[in-house]
Amino acid sequence: MNKITIAIDGFSSTGKSTLAKQLAKKLEYVYVDTGAMYRAVTLYAMQNGFVNEGHVDTKGLLNDLDKIQLKFVFNSDMGFAEMFLNGKNVEREIRTLDVSKNVSQVAEIKEVRSKLVSLQQDMGKDKGVVMDGRDIGTVVFPNAELKIFMTASPEKRAVRRYKELLDRGEVVKYEDILENVQKRDYIDSHRENSPLTKAKNAIEFDNSDMGLEQQFERIYEHTLRVI
Ligand code: C5P
Image 1: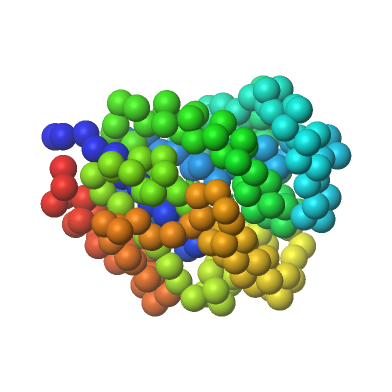
Image 2: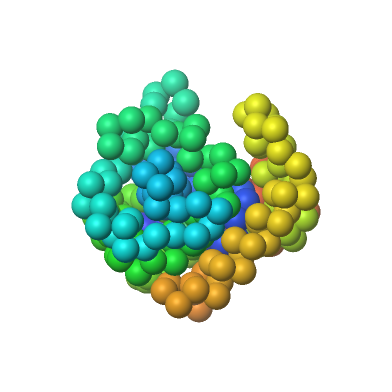
């Protein structure tokens, strides 16, 4: 079968990563969660005093950009790759609400994006990759053979995210999650550099009222038409 590039973009907590992981497993492709990369840079910025409550010391962070090393390491027990920041597994830390509150502000910075986009292009250069994010079909792989753009109502997405965080043992309020989801949507789609937008040839997919199985079947059908 022909190996292709699959780009899955969309708003926060639309279930992109769950679907992308499933699809990569089924096709025996590599899965790349680009949100994890922006989250890891944000964690570094938080740990080093370059960002606090959404205010970024851009100059300070950019001075340190070369010191930030990101690596995905496959965890065979979990069945997916985990994010390592400068040699340390940060998979849990990058998923907290604190990181979510700062990540969109860090992801607005042009130089941060250039660094991560070039890493992403390198990871996907041999095709056979499912990559999810905000700018995969528009900027990272504009020639991807299959592009999916996922949406769902903010409330549905906030409920999903809320449950996920509770399951992980984080103490959070639903209202805070909803506010964060909406704020990130706004910043991600209005920023100057690579704003979140649907690529012209992307298939739009609203999963507000769809179960996981049905979503997977629909996307897999589209995939089979392309490979
Ligand atoms: O996908 P996830 O919600 O983990 O992404 C976290 C944040 O990282 C997004 O809200 C967005 O600000 C940023 N991001 C981005 N471009 C990507 C992936 C994520 O700007 N390709």
